Length: 141
Image (cartoon, rainbow, N blue to C red; front, side, top):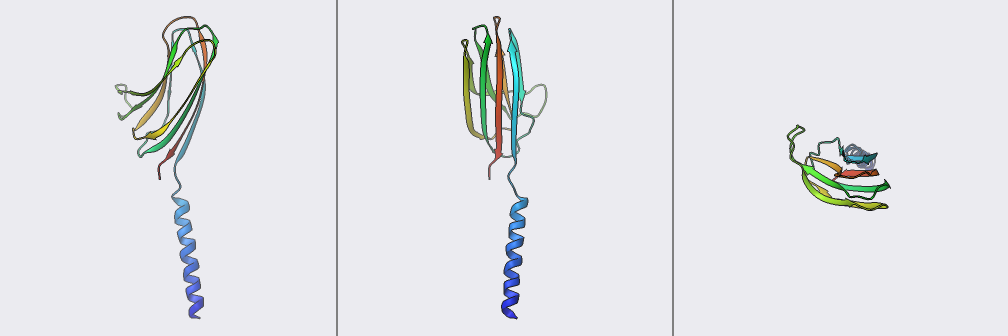
């Protein structure tokens, strides 16, 4: 009888432990976007999440030139400001969009800031660029 009670207690502890672990899963977010820059244009892709804890991030950008050949730029930016119109963004990575082909970038790291965005700009000329973005964020354990 004693052995049966001990076996029951171990089983209950095992089931309770696995149930607690299952409710504490890590947060994960993915963002996928397709847009285009035309002539003198600006495209801003805000990641619509306020990061309250550190997250791993992986941001892949592809800029595919459709027409024209003058420069544009993509910026990966972070901010610790609240969501207001006076947000101060700080550039962490820069990719030059140049030429008539495709440009690729993959940025990975640990995000400690509260907010993140991609800022694309084509300052001059007559050009069209298709922008493909895939980003994933995973909360640190």
